[in-house]
Each structure stands twice: as C-alpha cells, then as structure tokens.
Image 1 (cartoon, rainbow, N blue to C red):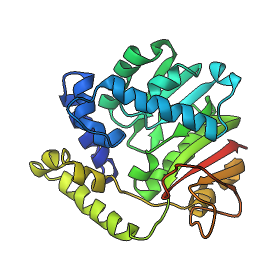
Image 2: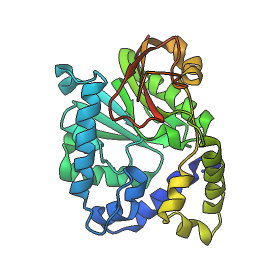
Image 3: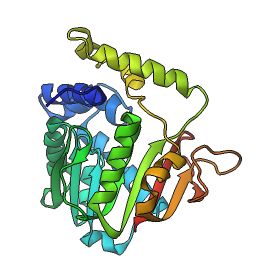
Length: 277
C-alpha cells in the first residue's frame, strides 16, 4: 500500500507498537499517542482504567447509555491498542474495533483478552486511512473519540461518512472533533512540519518517539460543526452538538444542531451526536 502523507502519524505509532515485546511496554512507549500519559511505571491495567472512566462518562453524558447496549453492535473508530475497547466489550453486545494499523489491532485484541470480553470483539482495518472494512448499516452505534482530529480534514470527513455508512438507519453516531481556537493556525503549521520530519528515514522513527514532537505532529485539522454538517447533514436526523461552554460565540456550533454544554470538555473539542436518517 502506498504510504500516504495522512497515514504518517498512524504508521509511526504503529511501528512503536509493533516493536515492543509486551503490552505494558507498548503503553509506556506510546502513552503519548492514546491518552497523553507517560511514566516508567505505567501498565496496561492503568491505561485501561483511564478508558473505563471515559467510556462510563461519555456513554452517560452523551445520552448513549441504555439497557439496549447489552445487545447492541458498536463500531469504535480509532480503537488504538484497546484503551476504551476493553471497557466497551464489558457493556456492549458486539464491538467492532477499527484502526488503520494492523499492529494496533493486534495489541487491541491482547488488551481485550486481558481486560475485557474477547468473545464480544471483532476487528476491522481502516483501509488506506479512509475506508472502514465493514458492511453497510451493520452497527447500532458508531463512536469515535480523539481520532478524527489527527487526520487531514478531508480524511476526517471521509471517515465520518464511513461511520454513518456503517450505522443502520435509526442508529446513532457519536463523533468527537476538534474545532478552531486562537493560535491554531500556528499549531497546524508546526504539525505539518513535524509530519514531514517523520518521513525522513533516520530522523523519522527517532522523532516519532519525542513527546513534544508527537503532540505537534498529531495536530492535523480543525473542523467546525458547519463543515461536518455540510458533509453529513442529509444523512443525519436530530443532530446535537456538545461544546465546552455554550455562552458567547462558539465556532463549533451550527444552527442546524441543538447545542448543549458538556462539563469538563476541552474547550477546543466538540461532539456530534445524531441519529442516522
């Protein structure tokens, strides 16, 4: 497969994931990728515990938690090494974990085997970073957190469309994006430079392990609700946008969606939750 520019951050993280011997080492080596936590004593159990707290919280505050989850089919777009996948498998009937790198999926299966319910897990490749290898209308809920902001804008939109395609009519999509804030233009420009450095044969693998470089390199897009709803709106019903603070001007808001404030949400992040029409 051609090594496309928009896949560089994923490939470098996947290389680190594939290189390490066990899951605890993977977490210590790549914690900056998946939840921005580092430390020599970090373990897979600690890592999954952070996912447990976020799964519990977001299912509740986004209105996704219901008794029907026990029999539902969930697509997790951007599963990584299974930080949130394992908790999902303890709540949801079937979890389809999707990511771009085979090393992520392999480690995700290991994480779920140790900390979740592997009988409920299925995995799928995100082919060439744009297409989920999953059937149309095959899941009841599509969920993506801290993934779409790391893609080029057109790729993020393509993946959001794929999440909608994979969700049955009447099902729900819950997608997390990063909107625009002051200073983002400089951050995005620096991120583009870092991603170019990651492609240099000797420098790239080493730079991909530097936390400061990783934090910049994963800054790939800023999308507001207007852009996303322009692309997806015809396929969605009753869209809701969750922002950090609904007071004042919010570039993440759009008149087509009902806006609600979500406590403790990063002010640059927002969620789109909607039914598939």
